[in-house]
Amino acid sequence: MKLAKRMETLEPSVTLEATAKAKALKAQGLDVISLTVGEPDYTTPKNIEDAAIEAIKSGSVSFYTASGGTPTLKEAIIHFTKENYGFTVKPQNIIVTSGAKFALSTLFQTILDPADEVIIPVPYWVSYGEQVKLAEGQPVFVNTTQENDYKISVAQLAAAKTSKTKAIIINSPSNPTGMIYTEEELRGIGEWAVANDVLIIADDIYDHLVYNGNKAVHIAELSEAIRKNTVIINGVSKTYAMTGWRIGYAIGEADIIAGMTKIASQATSNPAAVSQAAAVEALSGQQDTAEEMRQAFEERLNTIFPKVAALPGFHLTKPQGAFYLFPNIKEAMDLGGYTNVTTWVNDLLEQEQVALVTGEGFGAPENVRISYSASLEDLEEAVVRIRRFIEKNQK
Image (tube, rainbow, N blue to C red):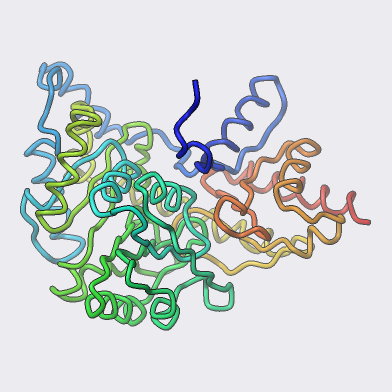
């Protein structure tokens, strides 16, 4: 059978691909240290697990729910949004989805006509551009620099805008860089977007994973005009160690949310009922365990950052949030005679059994992504192995 034309340009997720490769090698008995996966290395907090178990025992999660999420979970999201963003939304402004990734996918399907453009700052999370293409839109990648903390400016947005520009994506804290936009930067972007009738897609999935006194400002909280021109993407996966539960959500104007809900009703019927019950507890229950996990990531960042920064040929800025380092390794590649970052990553895995993610999938062919959502012991051993790999391969 001849496959659809969209499959000719669709790229697989490099993060999931790298994680799967590391797991396969581990299954063969190799001592692989995987720093690929974008998820906490903790199990879901017990109070959340208990809420899910109780929901199962009660029989309340045996049936279909509303396509856009249960009323109880929507109420929890309303309360959580009020506490964290400072404004109140209504149930019709919320859709609950099978993960934040699916919230993004249904949003692009809802807002994009063929050839509509979405401005995406580089480096970017690997699925943004592919999802835009699946919705028959056109990703417009705009390069940022390490000197500017990998953040896009209003001047760059103005230069990239065309008559086809429909939306921009702002991911703060960022995957893969961990950088956070300031309130001033976000206000400038927000006001430009409102003035130019460009929808803001605010990917806030890492907004609670911030470190060393930094705070993630939400672009949607800066003014009513900006809020009405923004779709917020969030979820419980990262903050609450619930990646496997697959619960995300979007908040936006009612017509957009209604369109997304229509698509979701045909695609998945509804998010898993038991996962929604667990998410209610995550958002409305005690937050102590989530804070303990955040503190652990902060300790790992502060411990491992100087060691990675000291690796030969590595150059990076200390991230403020998420749980990734994103060093430029051009000089390290040159030391070994490498011209391709993916080849460098593959050789590191083969020779030293350390799995990283190539920067090519993030639009950054001189970088690698290192997840520090692994134990300190593994992180420190990985640095030793990376140094050994660089030094023994010097030309």
